[in-house]
Length: 251
Length: 327
Image (cartoon, rainbow over all chains, first blue to last red; front, side):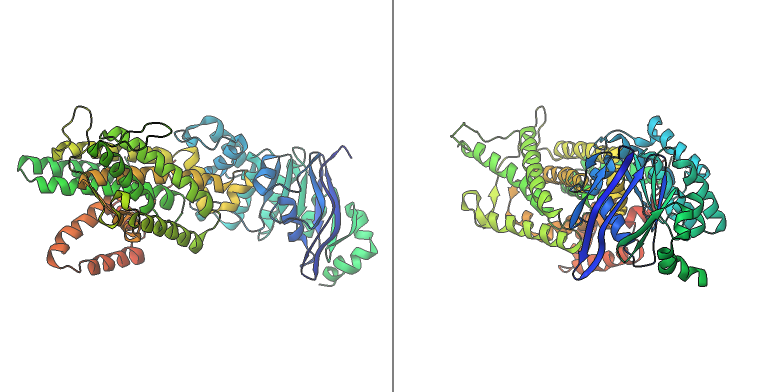
């Protein structure tokens, strides 16, 4: 109990007659990567949106570092240490790469209402940003316009911004989406090193990455978690095989 | 130095050179024209904070322009007729002092911007445009139907207000006052756009979700930007009223909002010097085309269309190239 930094307790959400999320409970413990997998339409996005604060659950509660954050908005949860990366890169595209990470560092510091303070001349902010870029391997493009980055680099930048926030919990929505073999490998290495800093709730379709990284895996099917366990347990679970992995194995 | 900086310096110096030349050859009308450019540019600088940096398409900035104007008109008319503005609960006298009038104009515009912003920033896109427009119309009809301050006829102030140590009725001295204020406002906005606040505000325009994800609430950023924007435009309104020594409900019309927006678009949305370039262009067109035909707005419309279709960066964009992310 005490080790869980993020705890989702029996949350439900329905859209009209469609039950998108049925009594879902899961937790994220210190030092782990907990992967959330499930076929398309299983309700992963709905769950992520509820945890991030974009969507309010009909029932149940969400706890972050021991505090009930169910009623909080996105920005408040972010300030409390929940850091989300997006499935589709969500960056300020007209800004430079450095400006994007500096924005993160600024948000982390929390003093955004300064009208005569140039954040790009603030060594603290710039160093925090550059350090984050270094870790994901983007230091050499710091001065480039974000829109000029390749798809893979944008995914990396997304993680770099997350790093500047030094959060308590990472919530990562398909960080590997659209990455090539090489990109996936780099990203896997980055995430692997990250779990020591803060645990990661990882939503991912790339099964190689999931089984390589995850300490625990939860399988979501039709809005319900049908199994939670280690990679080996999940692989062996007959329910999971029929619902999910079985379909892929035949491909 | 960057090309945009050079273009800015040339514009600012040019704006100073023209009235000085006019003074030398004794052409007071040209000085008044230059003063008009400066004041309208200031109004545009105000709108540019909301529109350019924050991406807030406000079609209601005439509210602040008009409030500034009426702040001047009301205070000065009471001073002119030696009647107090209020006797209860405290005695408030009118004023003929520019600094006092400016302060009141800024405070009133700021407070109203806070109220309008707090309500209308809950919406976005076309709804935001419509709500700001609706507020503008409310103030317009209110000013028409308030007989105490001239109603439809407006208010005439016979003598220009005073600034310590200056003879403000001398066109070049009044120009100087307005010019200094414009330069200060430009400096302020230039600092603002490079500040932490500016970075977050621009990021919120480009991607609100991103800003929320780093723990910053876009609503608060936009509200502060809207207030700053309203204050600057309000100050311009007070100066405009002093230039004409006349205030009327026409300052509150949606055409006024539209014109302020045209300065910003012609000059270059989000560019610090954009409103200055836009106001210069607007007044030149009005002056030269207006002499040719009463329907000069046709040409203005065509030009605006051209800018929107082919030169998104406005005049500054054409002269100084695409906006570079400064670092």
